[in-house]
Image (cartoon, rainbow, N blue to C red; front, side, top):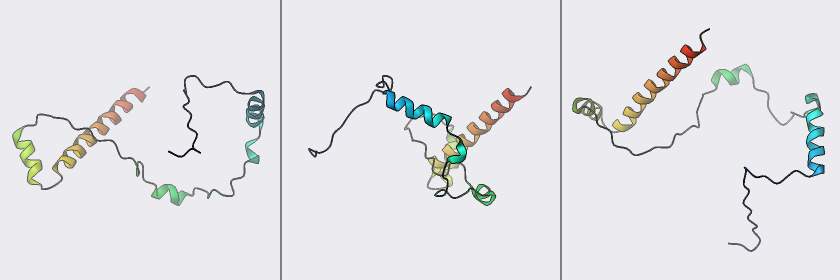
Length: 111
């Protein structure tokens, strides 16, 4: 490890107190009008952008190894489809999970 590197550990539950200068800066920022924000280096998000947007494009859930008991015919059917049968099983389970979550949120959002 380089002698020039300084490492510090910060406990997010016990942050050090803000200085008077930091408090004054935050207070000044809180009272500033948003019209003074310079957006010139950020391209506007057009309707075309949102029409082509893909939700979760870069989301990659972590995989967990587990053992489950499946009916032999169900497993044989997935395996018969060729390589990637575990990925297909996961996709079917995910689709069912999302459908269940969607139904649950619809049930809870009704007046």
